[in-house]
Image (cartoon, rainbow, N blue to C red; front, side, top):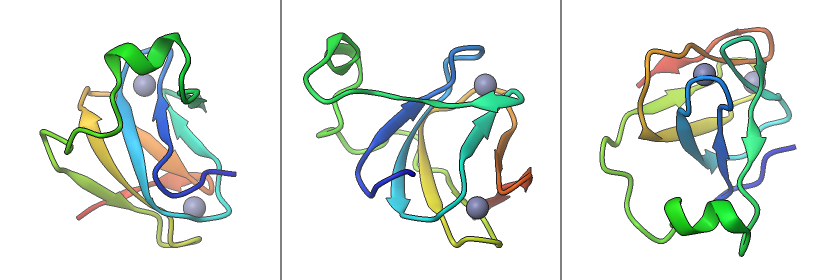
Length: 88
Ligand SMILES: [Zn+2]
Ligand SMILES: [Zn+2]
């Protein structure tokens, strides 16, 4: 389950998001589960969570209340709880 402040990315389209509000849903992009960027791992070097999101676009899941903001936006479709997330 996603935790607030964690960064996730899509291995298909490289979309990158940070969790703003936790939910019980699984974050999905391009039809597959998003991967968590491990703190201190290799991914961390190009995904500093300390930087403010540049784009600032937020998405909300109406089912579980999970809210994310997009750091690196792509055309990939973000889903949670089996449905598209709502752009805020
Ligand atoms: Zn994607
Ligand atoms: Zn959800």
